[in-house]
Length: 471
Image 1 (tube, rainbow, N blue to C red):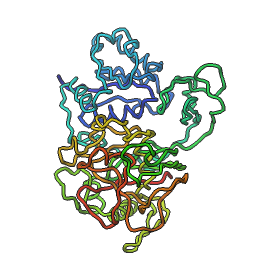
Image 2: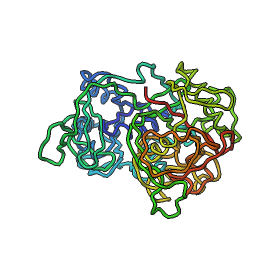
Image 3: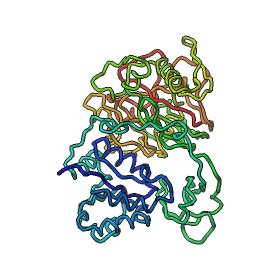
Image 4: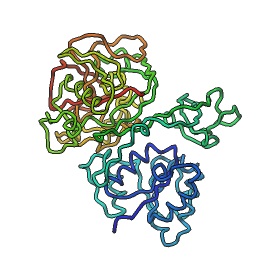
């Protein structure tokens, strides 16, 4: 079967993160063109005309099925319009992203084979591509396409746009969302607890009512994902709080992971979607120190902590940003500029957990970890290209394993104190390393596991990812 000319992607806007992370990037890096509302509709006034034009131009239709899409009038209308075209009716792929009664959307869908993305990610990706006779390639990074040019947004476009939004909190767990005013009255599902409720400002009587939790304001909204000049992508991590470390009752947990304590992250920040690759490092530093070579999309390794902070400053200079670090030989201090930096240990664990309280961000089952991490059980004793497995709920790849990652902090034991934006002690002898590597056991790859070494230490299982404070 020939590749489709273009695929229309139908989805709920509330599922945008999943669609971009799991569907759009997969199709585009395999040379398959897509019509996607975020890319192809520029203004609200163009909406209906653009949808009609997109349906006319595309020869295939893919709908992402979730409870949100079942509640979306846009999705219902798009499916109904496509099904009226007899010659294209069978060029239709339902993608099941979460549990829902998806066949109720249209009676003709019961005749179609769906692709279940609740299964193992690589199996689901391969099955989707097989629809068009395309073989899954695991050698390419999912964050960059080798078939289409990388799109680098202009700096002023990539940081913020002004829009009226409503702050809505889930009535069950209290998680806050900033929602466009146009979405008021729609049904939504909380990403943290799964509760379904109506996006509403007023106090009401039904289960979706939200009491004293809404706030209207005009705010600058930072871009969710930023792509910089070397092709690296960073994901916006929202502020929040979490329990850092391991609970006292967790069997086998190490002493340095205790006591578990509350940490508040009060400022949003950007974090690399994946660890710095050999290609990215070489673009900035001009050399590749890695021992394990063969694919430049593998993590850079054999870098010391000093190498990592130097890379941050060199990249900041390349991007025209104020240097975050003052480096004088082995003395490194914080300037507090707008440039790139290493994440603090607290920022690292907060992003790794991605709202979970389990051993790994995917749960407490070692079996499920194989979908998210390259560790001793499934790595074959080899490092792998970044981003080839499933990301966590924040959209960050490989935080459990592949390579250890340097953090900013000097190492010290935990105390029971509640902490706000901690950055570790002011001095020490060893710096923190997190995440585990392709040779580590599942136990070592837990979100709470800590390791430390001298800042001059290098290893072929040790790399880093970068961060940046939100402007």
